[in-house]
Image (cartoon, rainbow, N blue to C red; front, side):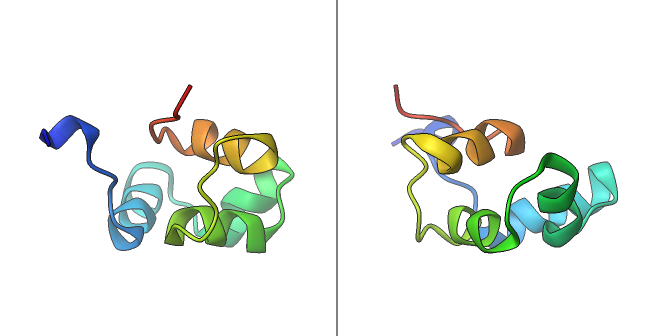
Length: 67
């Protein structure tokens, strides 16, 4: 598996949000109209985000999406 296809960890995602955009997960969720629970579940890998709101969260976070 190459580096580009690996999923970043939850801490890496949260750190990137905080440093690049100055946002917490809660602020990100509110800003984009998502529930905090949905964003948290996607970041932690509990929701795969292959379709629906989870997919939209992955897209907004800049995470790879399975087509």
